[in-house]
Every structure is written in structure tokens, then in C-alpha cells.
Image 1: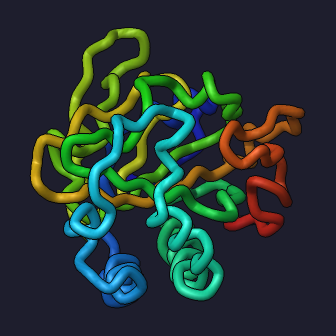
Image 2 (image 1 turned 180 degrees about the vertical axis):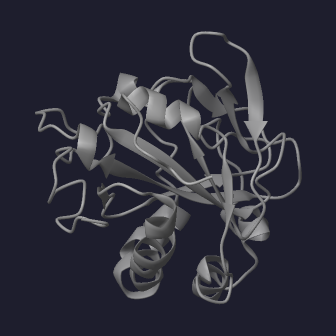
Length: 228
């Protein structure tokens, strides 16, 4: 299903909530490059990291693996990510959009959760003009995957499972979502990113909680407008 502009940003998000899209692994080798960087299979990252107390919102992005990812992002992941946005995501979204400059890296260790709390991203200052995408890289299946309401304000949750080579879209602004404890013996790994839907875009003063970036074109979101 192509992502078309609806009457409101919320209606646009809900229309494609839970939709999955397959991409070419040879063209966009996210997992292969990360496994070269870390020196082991992504599903085995916990064997290197060891045990952690249960993550909460303030520390679910604070492991050494996250630091390695972000410190090597520009050289290793950014070229693939920009190609992915330009040549894959642009084919799914029909209207103009800007993209999150640096995507968010997630790991769900066995016995832990990868999202610190159940929430909507509106709670963390994210604006209504956003649309969210998740790329599954390792073990993105129940019980270690993202859980979300099917419809906002219902408290009826379901798993957003994602095989490697797939990406899903979901309504992160209106639907409560989070993660449960990973009771498997494999690490969950994913990358997620948001796009600013230009038909609904407006400048706001709010900033992201973790990065303290302004939700503006040219800061949190790219200067480049795709499909313009």
C-alpha cells in the first residue's frame, strides 16, 4: 500500500498503521555492515554486553553498543540509510517529506526491554506531522518486538513483528506502544526513523527529549525534501 496524504496527519498515520514493506537486502545491507562493525551476529550482542538492570526511558539508549553505532554512523550506516530513503522510502510515500537525519538504534537484550516505558511519542514532544518507520534487523518477533495499540485509546495491543528485509510503519503519535521483557535468548535489534510529512508540517519550538534537537527542517529533519 502506497502512503497517500489523507485529510489529517493522524488519518494518514492510521491508514498505514502496521503496514509492512519488503526491501532488497543486497542494495541495503544494514545488518551485514553492523555485524562487520561489532564483529558478531546481532542476535548475539548480549554475549558481549553482559547483564543490565531493566532499562527505563532515560537509559535505554546508553549502552556501549549504542555508542559504537552512533560514533561510526557517518562512515558505515549513513550511506546505506540515505540511499534507502532516496531509492526505497521515496517509492512508498507519494507526498513530499523530510527524514530524520540520524535514525534511532534499538537493542532488546534477553531479560530486558528495549523501550523504557509504554507511551505515545506525543508525550516526548514529537509533533503531529511525523510518520514513523521501523527496520527489523534481528529477532523482531513476539515477545521481544514492539507492541502497539491497534487503534488509539483502546488499550488493545498487538505485536508489530518484522523479519529481516522488512520495514513497518506505525502510528507512534496516537497509539500507545512499548516493549515487554525479551524472554528469548537472542538480542532484538532494529532501527527506526521518522519523516516529516510536508503537507502537514509547521514549525514548532519543541525539542527531542534524548538529543535536544529542534523538530525543524534542517535540524532533527533533513534540509533535503524528498518527492518535492
